[in-house]
Amino acid sequence: MNYNHALFLNPYIESSATSTMMLFPPTGLEYVATSAEGLAGKITLLDLRQEKELSEPDKLLAFINSNKVDIICVSIGWDRQFEEICQLLNRMPEGIPLVVGGYKATEKVNELFNLCPKIKIIVRGEGEETIREILKGLPLENILGISYRQGAEIRHNPNRPFPDVDSLACPDRSLRRNEYTLELNGIDVANLSFDSILSARGCPFDCKFCTFSLNPLGQKRNYAARSVDSVINEIKSIKAKVILFSDDNLFANPKRAEEICDLIIKYKIKKRFIAQARIEIAKYPTLLEKMVKAGFKALLIGIESPHDWILEQLNKGFNQETIRKSFAVLTK
Image 1 (cartoon, rainbow, N blue to C red):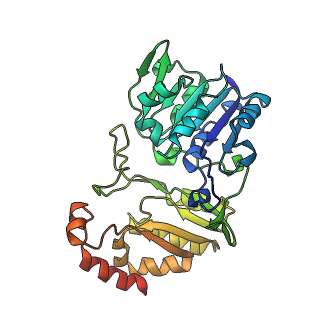
Image 2: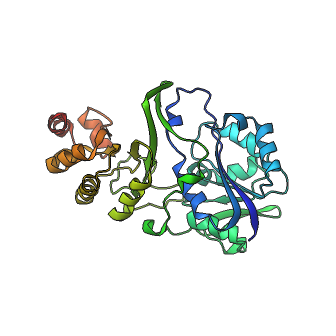
Image 3: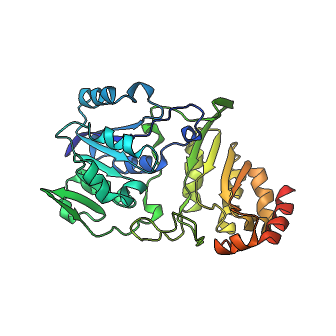
């Protein structure tokens, strides 16, 4: 085993308890940390939004040193706090490999190498398979999907093809050091624990405004759905009372969505569900009825604009009349 203690770090720090970002577990990082299991003596997952006592750099560095961490993996997914995260990376201990990944890291590879001289490797794109090869100690030149330092040079290996979604283990929630609760504006909503699940990756639509239709490498993650059984098994394992389906659109395949609802009802899974959808879901009243029985309480529907000319520009595929007719059904 090449590493004794691997640290997976979500570096974002929320200055206010009212931030809605506090709701969401770092699912992407959890997928990668789970993929690393068995390849390091110990794996620690830290979410600095929740670890207030470690949010100060000096205390985090003390944690790293006292726990003998020998590889650090950091996820950078967003533009926000980018400068502060770079400052944190520059304070990481010398001699410990620093691996960075995530959407924003993929987008800003060269900038990150310039700003953060301690970064050794940047994982581009989806990182589950890549982190396993890094931890196994494969020669860096043979690992697809990474950029890395070699002396004074930066090398960029070819992109890694997207993995089969059913080949990926669902996040090991036992790695968490804290629970997530449904708090809005700093108020605990009925003491409800909160979690998220990703039942598919990618989206079958091509809205022009969408920043995620292509990843920063120019790769399109075509819609790829997990098996229904794997989704249900993961839901059964989740202790939280409220679950968000973080798919771009859970209902891209209405038949599959109906199967998920059928099994939730069959197994009498008593949870509350939230999902993202398009207004086309109004075309499926039977599915809507099953969603109510299964415990769906909220839909996040991207309308984007009430103006037909803007909807056409955005390539949304519907107009104002369709919106009105759809919401007449959804209101029922």
